Length: 85
Image 1 (tube, rainbow, N blue to C red):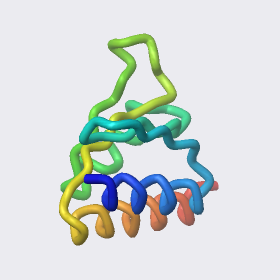
Image 2 (image 1 turned 30 degrees about the vertical axis):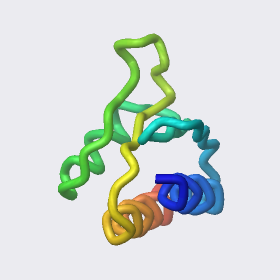
Image 3 (image 1 turned 30 degrees about the horizontal axis):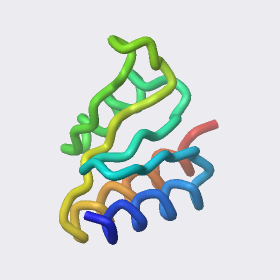
Image 4 (image 1 turned 135 degrees about the horizontal axis):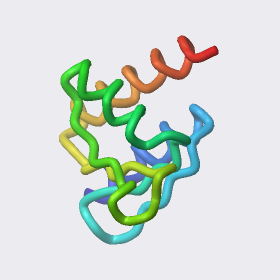
């Protein structure tokens, strides 16, 4: 989990996203519109949890996965970020 957490936090930070780790099996990531981010990833087969129901509209919760899952998430987020105006 710790290696996965570091990989996600480092990778997401390199894409310009503030990410907060901790000791759990997930990270919080500030993405702007959490629901839109959730929907864009879900369309590509990746599920994250939007945190709007908890008053954190700008955040999603990302579960730490296996190394190949974490890399796929980072690849897709990189593509989405590059495609954003």
